[in-house]
Length: 575
Image 1 (cartoon, rainbow, N blue to C red):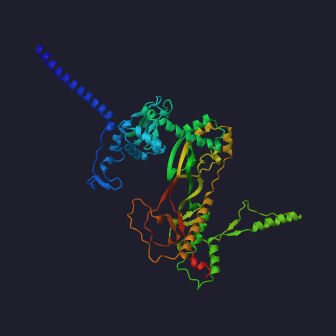
Image 2: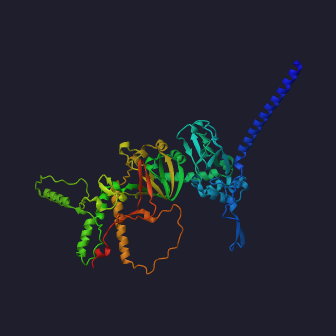
Image 3: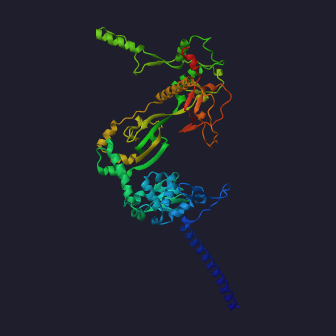
């Protein structure tokens, strides 16, 4: 009996040990497969789906110039949305010496969507396209570890990475606002150019695709020489500036190493508010514009201007000159209502005071002369309007009621930054109570800029640079002056258009306008014009309105021009 029990127990143990071994083998196989999949993850193929509207993805046509047939395969450029195309992936899998010039050019054209890649010069872009390879890593993968020597630098094609100070990058998943890099950014460039160690850790926040440049390929294809040429151009740019005339070559080269080159096309936004930027912008090529978003409803001049023009609104059409007063009188009346009258009386009193002082006559009476040198502007008195006279909603402002539709804003240019100028230096030495904290917008007119952080720039300044910066003053006009400028230009544009309509003979036939399909999200030009004549009308134009977001304030409607009630120009001219 005992022998039978021992043999039965031994069989059970064998079965349990076999099950345990089988379980361990399965776990090991899963781990090996997982490692194998992660190792080949960058080379997996995408699911290519032929679109329904293209039954024949391959088509060809005869080229008369080359006397041959050109074939184009659209499937070479089809991939999952946002991912690196399979055709480009095949190019990056080749060795740099095996890549042909058309392949390098095609890869260079594809990478123009990356801002950091586009900032390099054209020869350097081609060399980078020749040597870079493709990689894809999963979430929590550490790409660059702090304290290690850098052997590669990376362009982010898809995904997000975080920059941390710890070794394993775990703090990025605990921090509520980590430092993130997104598609189009690059990192690790200094690790190849200099023998320094990594100063931060970079970890993937999600599945991320990279284009990687290794040190061996970098040096073998002489990319370091091209980088040195670009650095020499930046050095010569800084050396030509009067501000850095006293800096030594060593400090100037440090400034070159700290600078980050960025290229912007025409009309591209550089900064929404460069007053809050932590960096200084040097315009090395091209030019930029400084814009200010003005809320016209907060200006007293705009409030008077609107009600002056709304006084011309009448329920009846304007009468002709036959039953009205003479054109000269009506033109004078129009001037009084449209433009303020200047009072130069204080200039006469000042002249009398100076003449009596020259003659030795005592002049003890006190004369109140305005502190500014501009003549006092006496506009027509604005009568309190009956809210029921206008069939529109009114809003309450600091200066009185204003039609709700007239509470608009406008972007006004206040300064042009030319090549060799800087943005963000004029207030670097001012105390906080003297800073102009108005948000100012920087827009490119086709420019190449160099960004340097203010903290690093202040470390390189010497006494002579500080002295020059203390004399550097850029005073931007006030919002009230900008509002006056906008309304003056608007009045001139209205008069110019009315005069052209009067002098130019109208067309006998309407011009031919081709029918174009409306693009999704396109804005109608009428949406940028405020028509004060239609405030009494119930029907409103069916077009979208452009709204600009503001910090801590509700969005504001943006206009480029304001159409006002006015007399016909034929009635103002002499008959």
